[in-house]
Image (cartoon, rainbow, N blue to C red; front, side, top):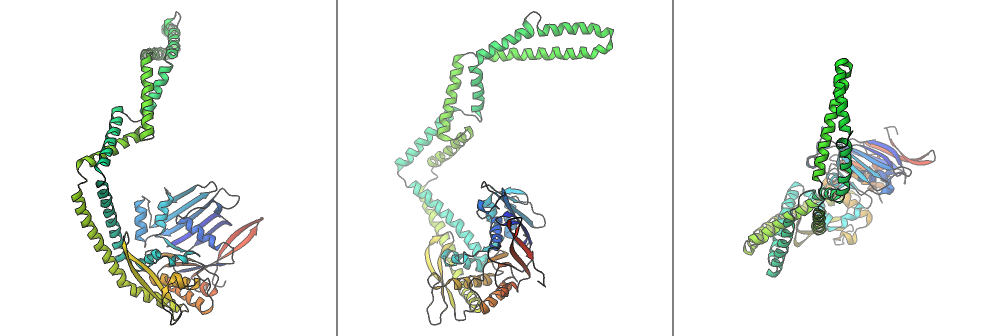
Amino acid sequence: MIQELTVENIAIIDQAMLTFGAGFSALTGETGAGKSLLVDSIGLALGNRADTELVRTGCNRGSVHLVADLRANPIALAKCAELGVEMEDGILVVQRTITTEGRSTVRLNGKPVAVGSLKEIGRFLIDLHGQHDNQSLLNPEKQLDFLDSWIGDDAAHLIVQISEQYAQVESLKRKLNHLRNSQREREQRIDMLKFQIEEIESAGLSANETESLNNLLGRLKNSERLLQATGQHLQTLSDDEGSALERVSAALREFESLGRLDSELEPIFGQLQAAEAALTESLRDLRHYQDALDLDPEALEETAARLDLIARLKRKYGEDELAILNHLEESQRELSDLESGDYDEESLVSALEEQSKQLEKLSHQLSELRKGKATKFSQEVQAHVRDLAMEKAEFSVQFTEIPIQPNGLDAIEFYFTSNPGEPQRSMARVASGGEISRVMLAIKVASAGRAGVPTLIFDEVDTGLSGRAAAITAKKLEQLSQHNQVMVITHLPQIAGRANTHFHIEKQTASGRTQTVIHELTGDE
């Protein structure tokens, strides 16, 4: 259930906050006041595509903040757990921010997640029915989704099993097709893999080798200059007469004597001791550095050649050493599969037959379930449609068997007529816009309490309605709100009057800027 929605800097909405309760909420207002912008904002919170033009003019970013109670929504809770989103009392806080530069960020209870992950969770939070979504009712695939949603868990569980079984069958088909390729192609693949493996293995790569080689190459290229410069400093510090080390040592001996005369000089004596030790250690390190410098031109040539080799491997196998080594592992696994006999045709054919039989069995089980439930589904939808001022309307589901897909072997089509004596035909051919809208509402009401999505939002559900049809639609929405949280954007008082909560949306001008203002009406208003 949605508890709260906060919108900032979205189109003409400067800032708006709405608090929702269970049951039926209505949002009313004049055309252009910003009602549909609220629907767009909720869509952003569900992971819909973000358009930079939604950001309010003069602002760098816009945001939507949505609070949902998931305690009665186990599927959404499970999805959050999969993403590692920590929950407290089942509350989910969704924050979506978009910028004029096209960047979009999502946080779930403060945890950054991808927009795709938000979209996956969002479809279990809200069923957002916009002004143009009625046309989806004419899509046979969407019609099948409506029927399966009405059937509920029994259909959902079978669809999951069929989808998994279908993936196994397709995988076996691919392996079998691969096996049946010509032996020559298989041998060519083996030869190529062996060449790649040998080329990478012979290089003896290690992670981040390029960085250390570049450092070494820099030292080798400048070794003569480095040797000369460090040698000069060695002479200055220790080898020349009156060197720094000699002078520090002399001062140390002098202060050792002076310290006996005045104890206040003892700290200076200690500091000079430390200076002599540090200087001695620095000189030792400098001599070691000189000894390690390599003036050998062959070493320079070998290092450059090694870098060239790694560069060639990167162009062929990956952007860095780690990617090349990953390619090596993948090639070794593929070569092992090709050479180990894992692609035995007889066993693959046997496995494919067995898995295909299981897929067919599950698909027929689902088809029988759908056909067995379709009559009851049609009766319920037809009854609700007739309540919506179409007393003679008829509605049914027609089945066609198709090759098995991840959701079974059924293609269905909704058939409909609103005229007595006329045969039912495909809704896509005979239903008007107003009729489609009413059938959609009838399906939603029939599915109330069955589908797993707790919140339903209707944008302009009253298009083309008036009088008795509007009053009946309002009653149906109220009936729907007994099982689901329902939010409706409407122009009709018959619908708004049925709502538990009523928000009025209007457009105002302040300081030369247009903005949307939302006000929750009280009983007197």
